[in-house]
Image (cartoon, rainbow, N blue to C red):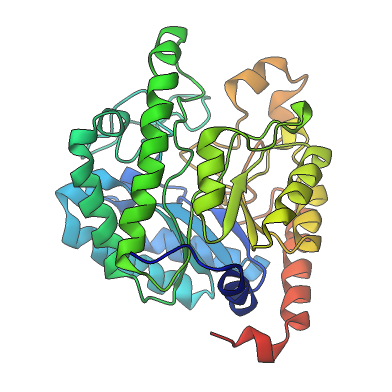
Length: 367
């Protein structure tokens, strides 16, 4: 099995790829990633249109998730659709981060194959489906199925330059924002314990394939207000095992700054792979320049307003904010491709153009 990348190799990767200004992606026609990637609902025309808009505004990277359940039911078809997606993204000069697993099961349903449920009215990300699903995460006897999936997908694209990085597991142990107190108690420490073990396993499986691309899992339990930035065991493991450091923080700007400062101690490239929550002070116009200044790749949540309804605030925020519907929570473009904020899209174009001009050709082309 190969080892974690050295700091030198990780930093060479950054020199080659440059600053990522990206977004988390589902097309506006998909309620979750199962719907995005299934054969009957894979919408290449909309993907092409939306990534064309993203290119026009200056974006150069995206992050999107893959569904284990689609791989199990239609492995060859899924790989073909990933190939199509990568070709569309490359045509628009957008690099891709693929995420293989995800514990965000906000729908309350186990992942299921076939037609997905319609979005629940006025509810943020109401049909989010996990991968492979909590029942599998909490049953190690089923992990060989997950291992086969991880090895197969990474192995198939291990030398594909259109993929910039593999994000192995999104928010391990996330019990969901919308679960009932009974469900919360049921999944508390048990889910987190299994998820932690699975973090170590998925790194081992992925490294055995020896892909050209780096591996990461994002730390996501930051509590800077309590001076506890990423002390959770899952985050500690993720930060110690990742080739490239990544994290999530829907935090006010002062907290985001503390996080960025704390992560400099790793001497590795850093990516913030989830951010932007306008209601909570995680503001585009303040934080995109901050990420740029810190040379931290950024992937805000959402591109186009669509079926995920992520322009709506989290339910708890909606109850407490004085004017919850006066802002978009996530997302940056309307279904017609127009900016929610012209100032935000001006920043994207300006900052990505600045980085492109200041990159050194002799180091940018290093392998």
